[in-house]
Image 1 (tube, rainbow, N blue to C red):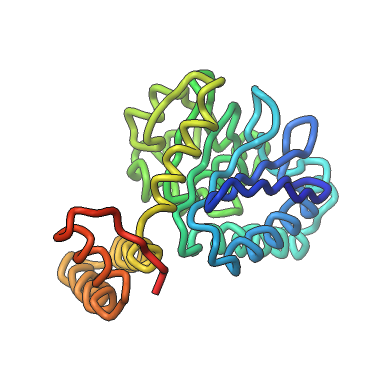
Image 2: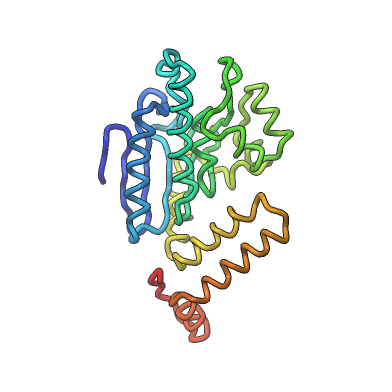
Length: 260
């Protein structure tokens, strides 16, 4: 396990477990964001890592927002810089060519929910609550909440969360499609690791190309999105993994993917 001041990185085979540990509420201070960005860069560059699980330290809180004390002294220029840095790090997470799974182990508020939404998948503990309460401070989300939330749950539900500031519980998040599954808190991380191990065993280039097709096409008209899929489909047929995967299927054996 490697550990910085705020971010713990544990490698379990081809899976990276990233834990945010910034007591008392794992807030996304500028220092936490900078360290997370550095850790994500190292994961991105490591071809031996096939999937990532992101969670928070402790049983009750994933990330309960940005660092309000740090924000209280900021002027508009400093706030803009904070938003740029936060969005840059979350974009790095979203764009990572490996499956990313957020295990929401408790409260995910403000920047915490924004961080979770930058992952490919989210699962949460039964006691988890999620919300964008910035409106209650007279401000708005700055790490992507106004953009990712409506894309995931729809405009009406996103407006409800953004303008009332009220959190939703785990079962509502599941019904709205904000999370993929709800688990007892003591099973959450292991369930996330199971998903990650499954993903890490797949063909890495195909995983990357699926992400490319989905994220490039999601905001485009269907016909343009389908063109994105054709482009990714063509690219995957240029890989050694495609030949290995099809041969293994025909020969009734497990494939040995190399990421090439």
